Length: 313
Ligand code: NAD
Ligand code: AKB
Picture 1 (tube, helix red, strand yellow):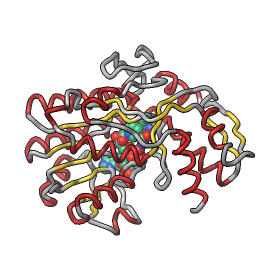
Picture 2 (tube, helix red, strand yellow; picture 1 turned 60 degrees about the vertical axis):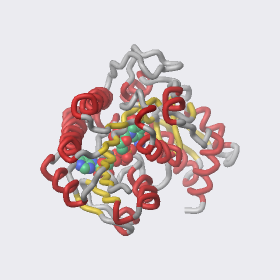
Picture 3 (cartoon, rainbow, N blue to C red; picture 1 turned 180 degrees about the horizontal axis):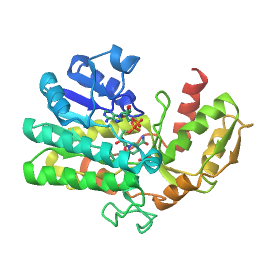
């Protein structure tokens, strides 16, 4: 029996994760929280409270009142937004994680923290990118994610906190929109394909990045927290991936369903530079070996499912 608190529950991941956790562990036991007041399923189907995750006292009170034993800490500022305001990215990403880890230490909670392919940088081997390799990111987002991985390792080693995490690639989903990342194009393209039959992409046609469909990401979030701790060597954090996409390649997949779909390019130099500093393909064999990670959706299955859902909306 788990009692769970989720920070940043209104975002792209939280809006999928919270319903799944409530299905698995019972709606009253999953407290959704976010900086902003939410609407829809996340607040209607179970407990919700407004919570600024950078406020350590408020996080402590929320965990205590809910009697949480597990925190999924999703509140963060993503890569593209982070480059527009690097100091805010540092403040939000680092203060919120520090607050959550301190509360977890005091109250003996387990903590999930998502890391990202953003931990890698221009000096990292690109294809394949090993689990253990050079991590010198070129973005403030990546810097906070590397620091976050190290902080989570530290709280485990020094204080015995059960910290776990994965390095997510770009996540593709319908529902809540993505929150300001470099990989957002791979979501926007589907909305524009269905709505307008054409999409103008901010990355170049051959820019390859790892991606994953949200149902697989939610499985990863649940499975890593249920994994046998004795098998986990890389707690914070595991490379996980499901597919590698370029704008040109995804356009070809979409055209199998919508033959008239067209794409144009207006490259944004900031996001292009970020994408070029990230891996082409990460090696997720450690996750496969240590907790049996295995995604279900490849590019073709994901495309069919996305278009099916968006066309019937
Ligand atoms: P998102 O931007 O969609 O959602 C973040 C949520 O956090 C928002 O609802 C926002 O209101 C909330 N938030 C922001 N500041 C807050 C604060 N101070 N206190 C409480 N809530 C606050 O992000 P997401 O895509 O759901 O990502 C969640 C986590 O997963 C982040 O750590 C992100 O770095 C990581 N991640 C996401 C992806 C992806 O492709 N979505 C990939 C890799 C890693
Ligand atoms: C972003 O593009 O910032 C995120 C990520 C890969 O961490 N989607």
